Amino acid sequence: MIWVFKLIWGITGTGYLLQESIDLMRELQEDYGVDLTVILSKEGAAVIKWYKKLK
Image (cartoon, rainbow, N blue to C red; front, side):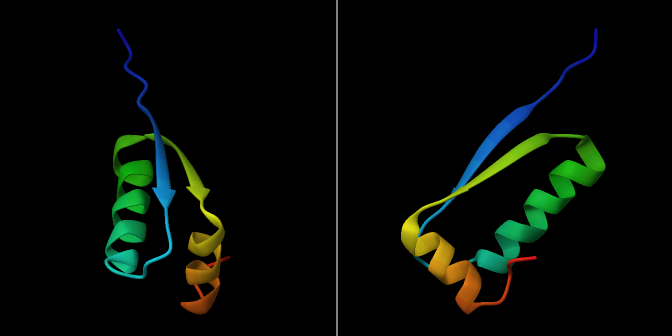
């Protein structure tokens, strides 16, 4: 049996632990093949832009 893990990760309007969260999301995708969807609140989008994390 093959397991497929799907996660939705929400980012809100704070930069607290933002880089750590991004690193963990990357690790989950690369090392464990997790299907990850990221959603941003309005302020979450502003925080991502402020910290220049949007690629």
